[in-house]
Image 1 (cartoon, rainbow, N blue to C red):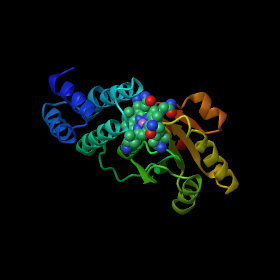
Image 2: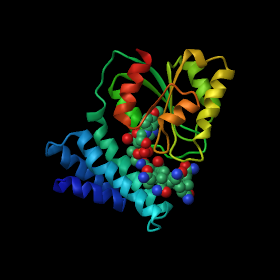
Image 3: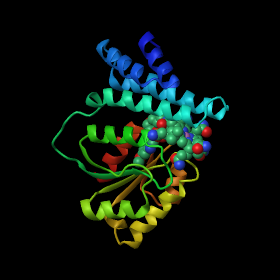
Image 4: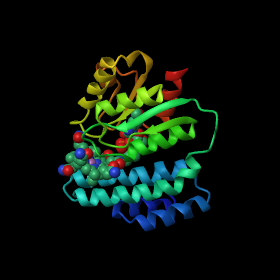
Length: 211
Ligand code: B1M
């Protein structure tokens, strides 16, 4: 790993937002791609934060400052990740499901989808089933995209699909799911239309769902 990428990773682990912003700018100026910075430095830094939490060395406040530092870095990379394109491929209502506050992965997926020319209706985090239903109804979204990072919040995806069915909207919309504890098997079990393991795969999946 190059020097600047190593420093970004360390700054994520330390939760130093200012350093992450400055180093991300430096890394871009040195010719690194936004995706390279994200994957080699920032996401690996966050994975290490998760490991430190699991090992009992980090607690929620440390995870929170690391998340802020990650968001600060993503803000610097966003213009490179999202290139304006006016030909919309379709509308996607995206959110992290009810009870779940983890929004970094969702924001990243959302950015990449926007960069691939989808119109994004970002419902935020802790989104109850009825909010997804409302978004499909009000915006005519073709895809509902749900993220979950906690095993305890995964069932909310199933509840959202059932709410779409109850509202008579399930046939009009495709449902895609993702997040670290998810799998293809879980997606099939709750009758989602697809699962993506990361943001790039989410773009490919969204394209295939509306093709
Ligand atoms: Co929390 N947390 N957290 N946390 N947190 C995890 C998820 C955990 C794995 C840590 C650990 O134990 N190792 C663990 C979950 C265990 C489990 O359920 N199996 C955990 C826990 C336990 C908790 C709390 C319960 C802790 C507590 O309070 N005791 C609590 C729950 C709060 C709640 O949500 N109700 C909690 C709180 C928090 C913070 C608020 C402090 C903070 C989140 C801040 C924020 O998001 N704004 C936080 C953080 C930062 C993490 C870790 C360290 C990092 C998550 C992250 O942002 N990763 C995480 C450990 C880890 O992931 N290793 C952890 C980077 C991000 C780019 O990756 O989100 O996986 P990810 O997204 C990926 C893919 O999953 C995929 O694409 C993305 C890009 O590749 N993807 C999709 C995601 N969504 C997708 C949707 C798609 C497609 C792909 O289509 C729709």
